[in-house]
Length: 257
Ligand SMILES: [Zn+2]
Picture 1 (cartoon, rainbow, N blue to C red):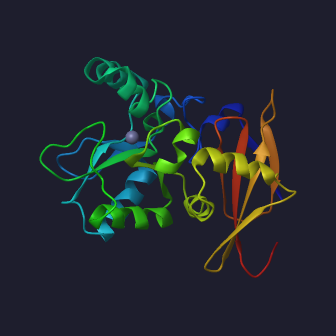
Picture 2 (cartoon, helix red, strand yellow; picture 1 turned 90 degrees about the horizontal axis):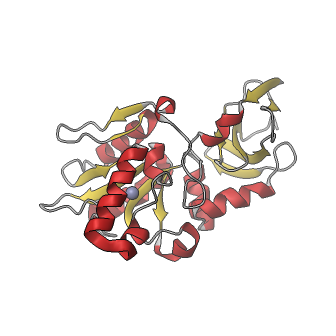
């Protein structure tokens, strides 16, 4: 066994952080590893691993001519500017519906992207990304790469954001698949995982020959949080941005439980 210690602020980082009207993004510039998306005309930046995976999907679909990455990481200041500008141009009702409050935008995480179908006049705030053709093919492929459509029509009352067919969020593998299986918004998934306290009960998801165990570890209130893990088991940890961590362990299907 080995012991792993998570510093208190780790709770605010990782692929599964929940950022919404209630929970602001606490990451600052220094915690990002940003890279630009690989096109000549595009200056959009995202977390490095997200750039790689997003590019793989678009490569696979051979869709660089048809899909434009309109928006990725935004600083808190940029989000503030977009919000203020939208208030001026579109009014309060529209802005509250489609633009996250400064500090509360998923775009500040570097894990969220807005995509547009390539065309002459792309709407920056509400780009067209229809449920047909190459855009729909992207949607279908994205899940196995760890991306979810973050603001579906049926989840508006839970996410607090209007239906946004163009906004995708990286949450990682196998979390996107689990969320699809149960039709969970990220808010619901984070809450659901509290039913699986680390070292007591695991949510089990199988892919090919892997048995993936997902669980929730509550953070210590006033100190760093430590936990024990089997040696040689690949794992990942993400803060939930609220009160704890999601731990994902990858085991071979045939044992070593
Ligand atoms: Zn967006």
